[in-house]
Image (cartoon, rainbow, N blue to C red):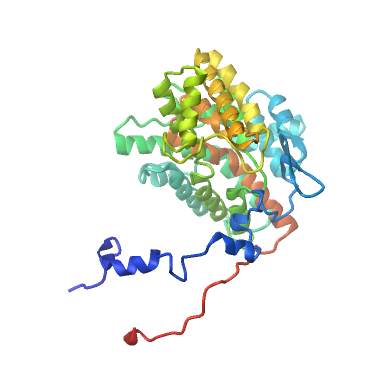
Amino acid sequence: MNNRPDFHDDSMFHDDSILARFFGKSSNYTDIPNSMFKTYNVKKGLRNDDGTGVRIGLTKVCDVVGYEEGPDGSIIPCEGDLTLRGYSLKDLVKNRYKHYGYEEMVFLLLFGFLPDRKEFDNFRKCLSDRYDLPADFLTNDILQMPSENLMNKLQSCTISLYNYAQDPDAQDVYQTLLKGIDMVAKFPSIICYSYFAKMHHFYRQSLIIHYPRPEYSIAENILYMLRPDGKFTDKEASVLDGILMIHAEHGGGNNSTFTNVVMGSTGTDLYSAVCGSIGSLKGPKHGGANLSVSRMMQQIIADTHYSCDEELLRNIVERILDKDYFDNSGLVYGFGHAVYTLSDPRCELLRPLCETLAEERGCTDRFRFYATFEKVVKKIICERTGKPVCTNVDYYSGFAYNMLGIPEDLFTPLFSVARVAGWVAHNIENKMYDGKIMRPATKYIGEPEKYVPLKKR
């Protein structure tokens, strides 16, 4: 008779004293009051007391500017800016070439300079030559193993690419660069196919497979592969290209990029490091935040029918802040940011993109509703806190995806498609300029215990 405990069954915890001791506030190993972090000068969550991030490295890839520092170290709010290799994101988005702005940004992030026309055309071909997945990858790694969660599926597919690569554990910069370019090129197909595999397997919907077209940009191919008829407008491709650019990079301190650099510093392969980043981005406090915005707005829209009555919207915002609406968290999703104070430059770029797309799609009333709600939220939060609050990139991204007909399942995977360029850029930079394993420290504050043999406990 097999008497081994079944760890899929919680019957082993029917002894309530075990859980009581584990979760009890008096427990020596679970109760760490916030005051102790200040006592030992430990930055909880790698945050300073004013909420800003603890600097953990130097980088030449990206700068996230959200505030100025006063002579006494105080935070002075300012308009946000995001620079990539010294270039403002605003200039890169507004001056991009057709629907290939994301490709130009990938080149800039990976190589550190903007390409001339010949270099740009060669790089576009380098990417398009790598669009197709390895032989049998679609069948064996995607269609035969569909997943309910597409971020988990993207992780498993990423680690599977390791098995198809030549010398996958190579650590030199050139090989890392090639593998990174390969992921940038293949991620769009992986998420699109994984979505249709899920919908076919779990919901019996038609299985649609469009192979990527080399003459299309990455933005164009995503729309082409996702739509049954493969059709899209220039405006749609332009908006999606802009979204990919906006999400491509956000400094070395964001959680998923930091995860990549930490893992990469150990000497592990790029595929494993990117899997760590994907797992980080999946979290609702990071890349999954746009889903929270989308679901909050769905309830608000259901209750207001796109009404721009500011008193009606004020009542809803007050209820959200008073933990009496939606998920009762007290959070108005899509507002506020850890770095940006007066404005999030990504949102400032995304808002007009949404407006032009809304005009083409004949839904300017929906855009007007989002803009009015945004104004009401910022006004009320400022009234309550005495401080300005910015609208962050997540507020409009879900709206843009909805207008493009992109399902919620793909909101966060699309973030991964864009951000993999930034992950690889920082991974390479760490290999070139540092090379040390990242090894931060923690302070032990537990009490010493005397071991008691099991038979005497």
